Length: 317
Image (cartoon, rainbow, N blue to C red):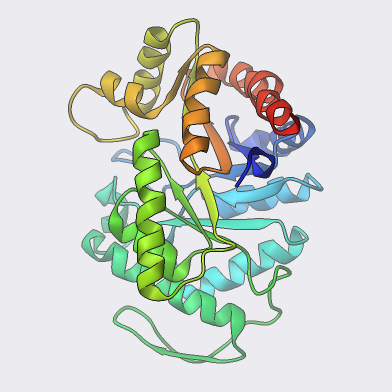
């Protein structure tokens, strides 16, 4: 792999009501992906959240080239037939621009409880859902008898624009997610990783693929870095810890956590740190900014105008 194969995207940073303008803005800035995640109840009372697929549908309708990425879709909440129909409709309507990022969630058990789901079963539900999803995309009729889903003579019509189906990137951090990526995915999208852990995940996925007899020739290696751009690493870490502390429920000193896992400091310092992830194997970089709302536009424009051009220039050398 070489740097010519690098691709860059960004998560949404403006409000849902500004999705049309933001999608056009990101496309004009040269990003290759616009990404949106989701939660159904982020805490109780819940913080503000949205569903990913409707936002991505709006973004697709406002643009022509940029790919749309769910980062991530909370797969345990979906019946596979419903998810197949939603994702297929979006892929067709967007002209084949959908990448489906999937994960199991679990940071907020209250949303599972509210939906009548057992949070402890989220991994098995996701595996079954992805298994059926691939069958619905590639077979005329599907019969499936699982623990969580049972289907008889199930099918969807029409099929997705992308054949055999839209790419599925599996998100996560642990071995179970890596095995899921090998069995049901077309790519790997971890978060809160340092470069060494990313490199280790590439090695592990290769080992799991060998066990499964899976060819990884077309497998896509993505990464979801949080980025905080300020004059010093210390200031950037403090801002990132404040921005992310309410989103993730990790114990310990959160400033030290973000220093280990995030891109921090000046644009040049962020470039140097990102290069370590690229050296570890990441090729599709989906930035998520970790800063106050009033600073998000500056971050996106700095990424587009200073950070990405560095890697584009390097690839031409």
